[in-house]
Image 1 (spheres, rainbow over the protein chains, first blue to last red):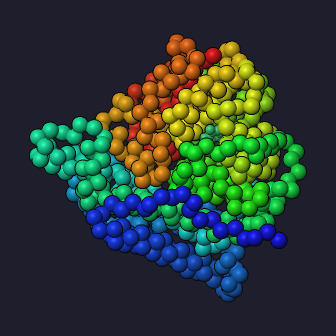
Image 2 (image 1 turned 90 degrees about the vertical axis):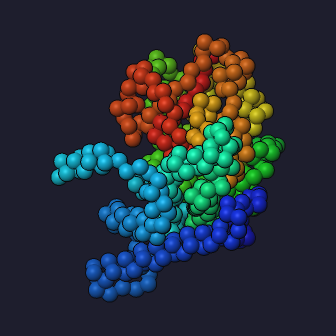
Image 3 (image 1 turned 45 degrees about the vertical axis):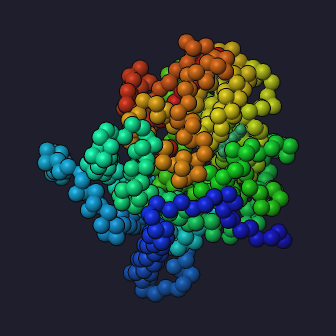
Length: 117
Length: 392
Ligand SMILES: C[S@@+](CC[C@H](N)C(=O)[O-])C[C@H]1O[C@@H](n2cnc3c(N)ncnc32)[C@H](O)[C@@H]1O
């Protein structure tokens, strides 16, 4: 039997930092990784709930075997987007403070939206 | 966003790995669109005025914009998130590839090809511009072999690239080549290639749309990196597509003069080098028959962009391990193409809207409409593909 394969960077070079203090870059990496892990956990809870709704009981194997269909995937995508928006709200606020508030576009978009329904 | 199309060699991710990959896709899109979408305003409203105040003039080029933007908090936040997210893309896929091995390599080695062929050439040396860095931070790049007959890098690229572009290029991640193949067919309906060659084919996802688009054509695909063509061959067989893969350096092709009617590449050149770019264009000219077509899709030249746009596009050169990217986007492509032997009057360039995303705009461009503005976007981010080439 062949050896297991480990995939590691070969030539990534020195990691750049963008803040004067590289610890801030590291902190960003940690927060982003944690945000991913929370989202993974959230999906796991979601899977658990869906399986319980369906069958009233479940095993760990049921969870592992569960794969979202398109409907579940879309729901989760929306949840992820809203979640990312909340987690990184502070950055969006900085952006919004600089992007000119365009009443005309806002109005047009609202009209478009309303005329769809 | 669609699911990735399954095939027999696509690695299987566990419940949690899949969740992680799906999350990283969304996070990346958020950083690109929401946070990245604020970069222009930060420049116009804050960075540029500050620069003008202290220097008495506007930043004169992308390099001054670069320094100024990366001294701003917002530019730093966006940059550090871009970098981390790119690392997260690969990290989210690696466990699935590792788990699939060594079985995956064994299955690929034992493959019984029914459609195409694979020709490996161990004498091909991986050029330094490929081996020197893990391009776009993919651990091991295209060429690393960790064991005999290793195809891991192909498997990593297949799933990782799908996570990277968030499914935006369709279930087969082939929106660009599908658009270009269709453009050729629609624009030049009398052009009927009998032999075609793709350069820098990686796993052949940019080859198959040409097999589909030109069913009468014998399609060859070359890449310098063995792991990706090994995997590409298996993938094409699993999808039932006839492709002839070759491990070959595009700078010195093993094909005779005048072999092909069509030679093309999809986002290859920016990962080569100043010298290689010129060598490859010469090889394209050599292996084409008179009347043949050379066509390449690549990053748009930054020559006519304003300094902010050029900075924004070129960011990857520095922080996403793309060593030739910056030089490439500054090349005079028309001069390079004509120096390779093509007639100046045979050169063309065109911005082609994505076939799936904007079919009407696509039709308009086939009909001769010219899109003037090159949108600032990284590869895969925009919906218009910069394409150029020449007839021999
Ligand atoms: C960005 S990838 C191309 C992506 C692919 N065409 C697609 O659309 O999925 C660039 C590829 O070019 C290959 N390459 C770079 N230099 C080359 C050369 N001189 N000859 C052949 N292939 C080369 C690399 O190994 C890599 O697989």
